Image (cartoon, rainbow, N blue to C red; front, side, top):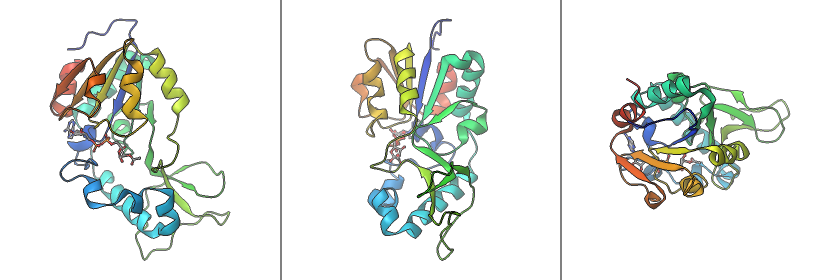
Length: 234
Ligand code: OAD
């Protein structure tokens, strides 16, 4: 079990592996999403310009999968950790599902956006809660300004969200824990190297991530089985 002192500040980064046991596919595993879909056709500004209906078909499918998913013990362990540590825990997820929130986490930073939010691709209207699905041949959703409504997701080639807050929290943390992320997508892949030498860096996941050398400790196994033990939340 991880010893947490009263002055520790914990930064937790989660990836697709934390939601795998809830039935949400990862990206790069055997049945990973990027084995069946091409990123450049469904998750880039170019894809949106070329075929927005195909993009909405992909995110509608993902909305349906996520809508049926329930948090697993890893999400619950992190929600309990927030209850214990309050603002000494910073939870940053690359996941666009809402399973951390469903488990009870109140302060989740979604660096790659949120599946159940949409925004206008033209005007500055704030992103809004949206659980609809827009499969072809349904009309593309349109904003009052005439622009098209798109998923509130950080696509490849776009700027991730909340980076200022995230790097301030990385600079302040004494323990960094990454859970279920392959360590290949930037900027998150460099977070462990960013804290190296100053904070303890722990990895929890099914296999060694690509950036394993940046971690002080790697605990290999399923997040839903290992995280409750590591965080001492039963
Ligand atoms: P990946 O699919 O790249 O990696 C998932 C990781 O989770 C792998 O290292 C698996 O070994 C691990 N894993 C699988 N099942 C697990 C389990 N039950 N418990 C613990 N670990 C498990 O997903 P990410 O690293 O999250 O971005 O991907 C990062 C980004 O790439 C995503 O946010 C997405 C994708 O393209 C965008 O769409 C912008």
